[in-house]
Image (cartoon, rainbow, N blue to C red; front, top):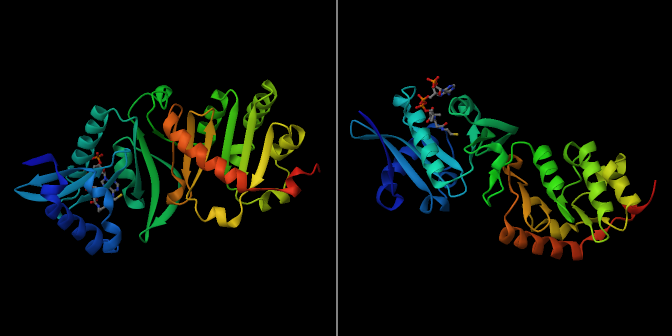
Length: 302
Ligand code: COA
């Protein structure tokens, strides 16, 4: 009979790593140093037992990241993976998590889709294997982010619009080059234009790491900043500042945030009410802003 148990890492790490090594290192040729990481100590772990043998495992990190899903090769296709995922989902709901997210190996996308996960973003390489980000919402979409919890961002363009439409005074953006699919959308321009005109102390700060793409084409947000130059400002990061960063982010009114990882396929999370975290990001942003340079090219009216 199959049983699924949640187990402590301290007591069961040997059997869990033995199975993971067989599946990931021996079968899939993932370098052993990538299979092990520091998250195992704080993660929640499950094992699947069949006839006294450990035949499956999975883990859940505090932030809702599901990983290390492995079923022994000779026991696949019998519903063991599904049972493990069900246990994780039920636990995550009980914990009050808004959503779950993971990086699925390409071949396993369908497996996760059967359990309600949706793929987003492009395929990317990790440990020599093609992956795609996926997430599964556990609570109704309309409540996401309002109660201080984080949610996985499915569409950066839509979530960025939501954040900006909620902001009353201040929008600070750190990004590569005002990616047009997000920051040149007509609705985005309209929202930022309204915000900039609404109050005397409204402020939109656009901090970009690369202004070259913006020299080559007309970007509506650059044009808006030239028209509303007292409230919409653009600066460019210096090369040495970029070296210390691994995330881009969008901040609204000191409480809303969307963070996008520069690597890991650009996975992103957000929350519309997370003041202490936003404060930390604002401090970093402000430091970067003070040392960034104005772009003479972007300030000039065409
Ligand atoms: N492609 C398409 N569908 C798949 C699939 C695959 N590779 N693997 C499972 N499914 C489907 C099953 O048909 C089943 O569908 P159903 O609900 O309609 O019956 C459902 O997903 C559940 O399958 P299940 O038998 O519970 O899956 P499993 O126990 O074989 O476990 C993996 C699936 C991916 C965990 C297993 O193949 C594995 O360990 N692979 C190697 C390690 C790995 O790649 N882990 C994932 C890292 S992201």
